[in-house]
Length: 333
Image 1 (cartoon, rainbow, N blue to C red):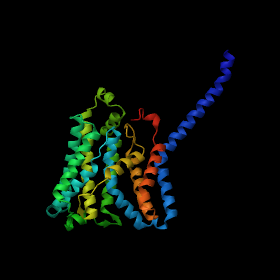
Image 2: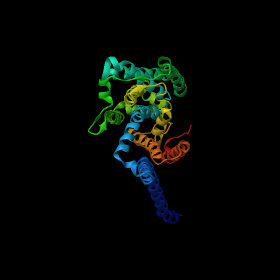
Image 3: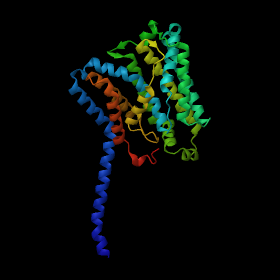
Image 4: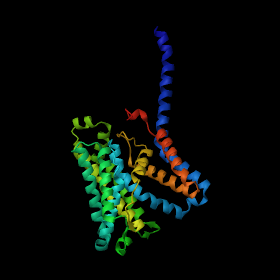
């Protein structure tokens, strides 16, 4: 009996090593998938349209993706904590409206009321969730309608133009070939990465997403963390509204419409599951690039506009299916 066991041990050990090696390779491939997928998109669209890699188009891509990036940075914390916010587009619109209405008197300092209003909207969402115990989807569904209604009420459907030279010089100009909006977006990405990587708050967000009851037992102030992360998202939405207003030189009632879908897609394509507990700011950045390049590349390549949404949806589904590690998620909801 002992000889038989000894005879089988080397084979079992070999199988274990092979299985472990295979699992490691799969995990490594999954972690690198957003970067690989992004590279594939660049190669494919470059072959379809030589103008895709031109400096003018790359500058356009950066400008188009800035608002999405700034908003997705805040949404990353929400989704990593296992919650969701579908009012981000409406908060961006409200903030852009406030920036436009105050730009004539405050100039570049219109950033203060814009970010403050965004933070206030986010804080209200957080209170509904953390204190009112309203599920995040339902709470933000209701506030989305309220915030969008406020924009419609004050604009009456007409755009509010931004004409102040100081405001436009601060946020719309170009320095060293890079638009100011892009500089601000990249700076905010670095700040968000540092918050997630080096602060207790970032670790608490992941802990709550991994298990809220366990987080409470370990002493994490879950209510405070939830309100803080929604306030952070609101402030970033306020900044995104300001940047979008500077880019279009106006605030409209339709601004930010449908933005929440692209935000969620960017975060999830980057590898953050909607169930929470996993994710990173770096992958969100890659997810934003994927979503932005996908839309821009199809336009540059002359893809039928009526097919673009179908292609975009299929590509995103495939990307999410491959990218998410289901073994680490637990229960799929």
